[in-house]
Image (cartoon, rainbow, N blue to C red; front, side, top):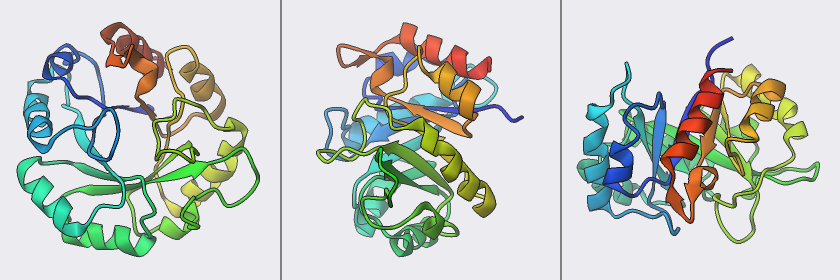
Length: 225
């Protein structure tokens, strides 16, 4: 079985990022959407410039989190902050995702879908995971929150994961799991459902600041599974 990939999202501080250079991370996320973790274009550029200093065999890839961006906005941003991944958390349609892929072939496009605890169509934009096949490079499942696009700090009903995983496998879509993960519960997720990748933000923070002890514990728990 392949190793689960790890993404830590919501980095804002250069010194915190420097403290992480020994962690075997696959992706680091920078939030450009409205959020208390939002970074400016200039700060994102500073942070991304630090990634080549990583001490592991491969440096993590830079992912930018957006909600309903315009193509022109993405073009201006990528000219200054060279992202590897554009992660879309709004009501972006499969057609729009495909436009982003065509406009920026150098980056991957991921689509976040919200999951509720109810057996129904979960995408808050009325598109299903299946419909994004061929339009995105990966899908990220996050907990539905009517007030915000991700970052709720709450888990969704993991027992619903096998249905999503079956579709993702059939369509050749890598499937990441986010929402309420932390060092003490990610092991259960890995042992039970073995996701392709996991994405954590608030679960490795202390009073709203990324905590190196929590980040280390989280990454070690994932990579030893």
